[in-house]
Length: 418
Image 1 (tube, one colour):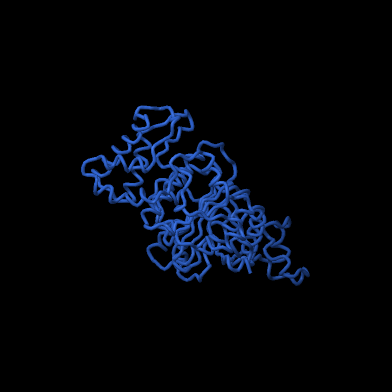
Image 2 (cartoon, rainbow, N blue to C red):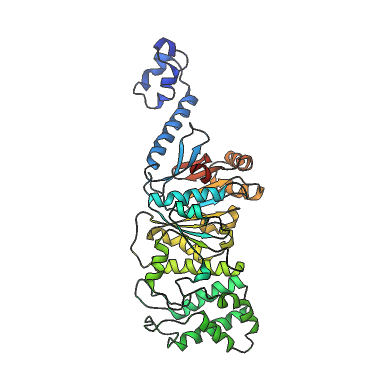
């Protein structure tokens, strides 16, 4: 835009501001109208680019809120058909307690169904199972105390050759229980021995490769085998809650679990009695989900949403990391929400195509976020300051549609339903 002779040309500045970058008269403008204002031109070009991005991403996306700059344009998360396509549908939400994480996640879950994403929500605090929320968005709430359609001891065939690996299954389940219940080395060895004995009781030896036609042992059978081991008392004392609650069905079929995940579902973890039981249930559901979906066909676009609030509780979960790395191609988008960016494994950060950083009061975590987001040294200082100064529901949103980031005021769920 040229500022010195606009009046002579009888062109109002509000009409042409920023059009220098696309005007075909560019070669003679300086001669005709005087020196252009490059800063003003660049500013409007950025606004026009933002409008184009908003239009492209809004086709089948979820509107998070409005940009705090750039004319309050809508800021949209579109993992389905945005341009350019996002690398995956994975999304991290980070913010201090009270910054608005739960309201953001409720809004996304509510809109996900309308955009073709079927949600499976892990609810640790009863934030997503109030009657009005469930009814309004046609979600079902599942209480694991009533029994889940999976058996952690079931061995799942390899999707390539159809064989089972008994010892892989033993190490996988024993590894989850060891980590959650803080088992020692000797206790872990006893647990593996008991698992192998339980499989042997079903005629399944460690070298077998064909899936069993008579079923698999369950946790009650595992508990029985543990009791047969000398010096089992401390191991059984640790694991007795997960055995005694009857959370898992002994012989579920694939259809029952698929039906379980194919409906929009909230898994109510809050009623479970201990943190260890909540974590174990979450891990076994996620592992079963992975084992089921990897047998399916590849998907170009996501059609399923797995949402985990309070995700720091599963920050070292092998199942979460495995899902984040591999499950994109099977049509799954994952959203993890937590108070600190450093709660997440580096592989999580590396595989999350979208991030929303809400208010953050911890300086070390703000610096960590700045390292992830900033594209220049000076920008790091700006991000560290912005993260602290943000109000509730304000955040920095980043993906390939918004580079290096967009400042956004999130529209919380309670405002959307008024």
